[in-house]
Length: 97
Length: 65
Length: 206
Image 1 (cartoon, each protein chain N blue to C red):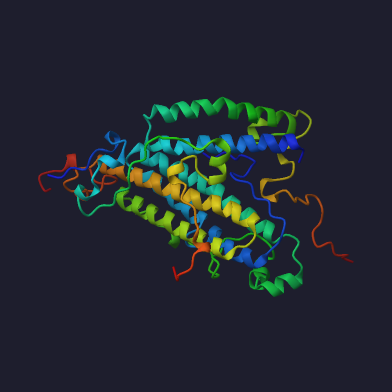
Image 2: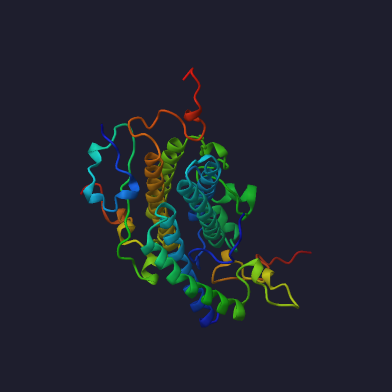
């Protein structure tokens, strides 16, 4: 993965996670304005990071596909592949006759 | 008559005496919004709330302690 | 409804396979205190929870657990990539392998397949939330046990994250229970089941 892609994904992960932990807190503290303020502080930064990522590296959701020529949603790697993705290569490459 | 303090009215668990709560029930202290971890620290810790950051250290101790 | 975001909640990047540990970690997918059971439990219970804050907690934690299930599957998948037959035989992974090859399948570490008997949805808000408190502790203890067995920091890192989430969930379910208590008469929390009974509509036989 290019460095900028890694960095953007890291920002998205961290911002989304902070929003999510805040959201769970708000579920039981719905009138807590400190928590609400923090949620609204993070939201535009997260949306910006996602927009930048999507423009350069492809969609993170099915609703964000930009290409008119190719359904980029199916592109690898899928998230469980990890950094060592051997996408597209056959595993246990036996010669089958 | 012992009445459980309404959760929304209590922001600081230090002011509540759990032992005066009604018997036969379970109670978890009410969390309030305090200092948070920064984005990177919170993500690594698995929570943005320092008071809930309670890591496992069992590996480094023995039963003989 | 559910939408899918094409990323893991916390990254899983494991460079060294280990089928023996994979068999252990699979328990947090298909085992008694795993993420699949947790998710189904909370998403089932949310329908009969009578107070909106508690509904939200069950909905949102149940949804998060699906993402955790995905992380567990990613760990097991990466630990069993490109295994040789020798590795499979040597690690005790052969029993799982014969039934599933290196497919990801919900079983407990001790062998039984996932069953809905691992969860309960009792239809009483106090009972359901106390079950949920117990469930989060059981999951946390399971992660403690996994951390004792794991030596690879690439595996320990996402496991540590998942363990911490259980502690946060415990706090939220505890707060949801406090909210349920706030909505009941503290002279007797057990007078009726607010998910089912409508005591204001009691007739003269009450």
